[in-house]
Image 1 (cartoon, rainbow, N blue to C red):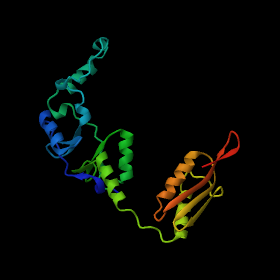
Image 2: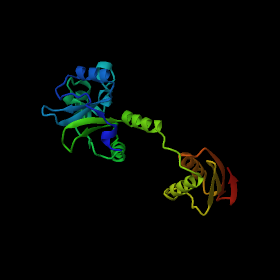
Image 3: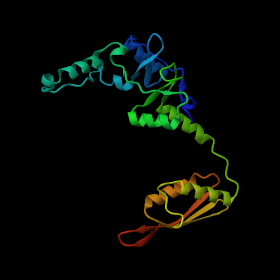
Image 4: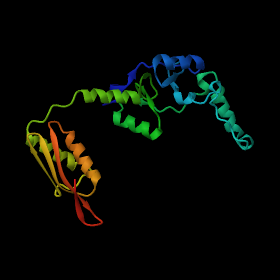
Length: 235
């Protein structure tokens, strides 16, 4: 999947000189948590988010400075005053905007959201180009819902299911060695047996098997090796 596959196209936008009251109305009317800010040429110059509106003088939520901050932190306090009292978007918007292009892989977009601690990403047609849409966490949830609504077709036959499971286990860095476990499949029922090193491996193996198309039930006969005593703890 790519950014263009999950983004909300043509999002509501504001200008730097948009009055804050008008921007707040857009938040409510469009049920969004972020508004891209475009200049007169249509270039992305910032983003206004709900977080920028958390502390406002109008609601009495601005931060009250300690007495010592009035002596040593005047520049920061002045900046906070601007953010809590300003009436136009330009004064409180986030200017360091992280964006992606329509062709950005979804996995890379999610990584950016995690690394930069942002909840949404504007989507451009090219770096520094025209705004096409926006990806929010809600868009990711909607994309997941679409995938879950159309499960893949079951694999044909027990041997195909077993081969798929073995290949998936080989690809996982957390998985036990295939020398230590046995996997049998009969009529879509998978039996897991053998020895694992910790209970998290048991949970992960059960989840892995449950995601394989065609698996009907799982019989867990795995035993957990307890390194302190050297004993085996059955599932």
